[in-house]
Amino acid sequence: PSAPPLHKDPTYEKYYRMLKMGLPHGAVQNAMIRDDIDPTILDLDPERSLASQRPPADEVQPKSIDPKYLKMIEVGLPLGAVKNSMKRDGLDLSSFGDIDTLLLNGNPMQNTQPDDSTISGTSIQ
Image (tube, rainbow, N blue to C red; front, side, top):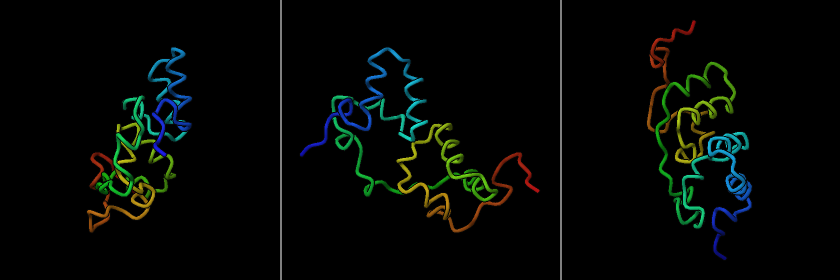
């Protein structure tokens, strides 16, 4: 069975309904972020399925994570707060594959852990 178009997909249907009712795009994106749904979904074609527009998760190549986010984990910020910061900075978390593991275990592309000098202008004592 083929996947439904995004606007009929049970995961995203309510957000498309919100847009149809006239809610601002930004308000709908904020609701998606609140619900831990990737808000960039709204930039895709609502008449096509998600699978037809994005590669499956196992085809996503892991990206290197900016050391500032690893530092946030290192100093004790909750994982959810770090992920929200990444979203706020415009990053598509789905493009990182298993983001939780990457944040908790460090970069697969780096052999060293970030130090205080990786965050410009910040001194942590």
